[in-house]
Length: 271
Ligand SMILES: [Zn+2]
Image: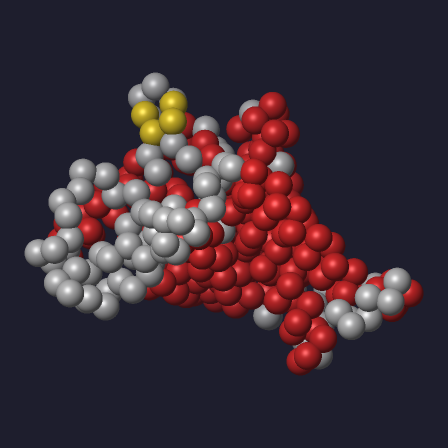
C-alpha cells in the first residue's frame, strides 16, 4: 500500500473502533479525543515505513513518511533502517536470506507495535504534557503527510511542521491527561498493526510471526498469495479501498456523533 492508503486505513480503523466501543460498551469520548486518536492512529499506520531510507545527503527518496519533516525525518529513517537491518542480521536463522537493507523487517513486527505503544504510554505517564506535545506533534505530522498528501506535497515540510505544532499545542492545552495518555499509546500500536495488514494484502508480506521460528526461519514473510495480492498503487487500492475507507469512516463519525442522523436514513442497523 502507498502512504495515503496506509494513513487512511489507520484513521478508519480508529473511527470504527471508537464507534464500536461507544455503541457496545458505552465508552464515550469527547470530539477532541476522537480527533486526536484518529490522527495518531493514522500517523501510527505510517510509522513502520519509517524504515524506508532515502539519500539523506541529497535530500531524496524515502517513503512518504520519511519526508514529513524534511531532511530530519529522512535522517531518522536512515538510522531506523540500519538498526532494523542490525536486528535482522543478528537474529536471522540459516534459512533466512542475507539482506543489505532493513526495510520491512523489525518495524513490521507485532513486538515493534507493542513496544512503540507501550513506550508512548510510558512517556505520557512520566513526562505528562511535554510528552503529549512531542508525540502528538510527530504523529500529526505523519498523519497530515499521509491523509492530505497532495496538499502536503504542495505546501512543503515547513508548513506541515507548523500545522503539526499548532495541533500539538491545541491538544496539550485542551485534552485531559487521565485517560488520554494510555489512549495515545494504544492508537499508535493499533496504527502499526493496521499497517502490517495493509502490507500483507498488497506486497510480498511482512514478518508477522517474528520472533516465532518456523522451519529454520525467523523472518518468514507472510502475505496473501501472489494471485490475490492487490497491486500497490493500482486501481483497487487507490479507488476501491480508499473509497471504502472513506465511507466506513463517515458512517462511523455519524454513528458516534449523530446517531439520530443514521436512523433518519434508515441506516440504523449500523447505529
Ligand atoms: Zn510497510
